[in-house]
Image 1 (spheres, rainbow, N blue to C red):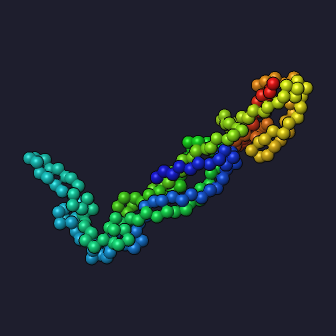
Image 2: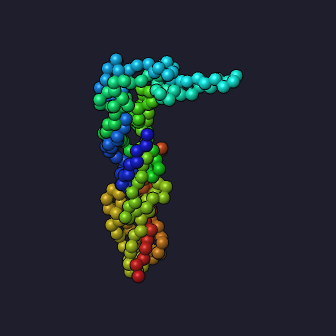
Image 3: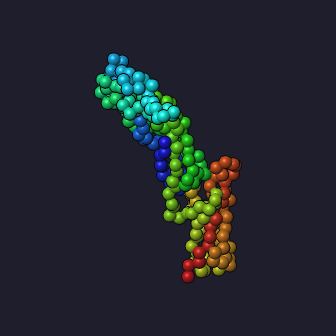
Length: 213
């Protein structure tokens, strides 16, 4: 079972625990998945005699096919459950907690075991796969584990040097622009990027100088 979840750029960088509401089919609580109002409401299929299969003889060959009357169940519900209408399942909405680790990106998935749809013929529920989409940020872009941002400076600031407050995902930091800085020159803020999802440490924030004329 699949669920699509959108998170912010900052949540992808720092990690977040969020709650989602997922509709899924569950075993009917009133009939316990039998589909019948009572045990007397279930009878053996008279066509296949409970086997769920119909055999046809064609010359020397015997061909089996699913019984069309009971759809392979081998039984017929004569008095269906009022809650599920004989379908054995009801649709319910569940609220689940999802822990998203720091460093994820669009396309990553998180598996929640046993939180998927109910299995066929009363089997256990499958797994729920949460597919992540990370929203774009108005200031930052991502390249691998690095965060890229453009820092506008005036011609005078680039020529004479200056110190600026540069935004990061964890607040502003001071960035020293040395005299004679050129357009496109980059400065790294170590460890200010995305954490490595399956490792230690983090990427950097790369600040690219844009000289405003």
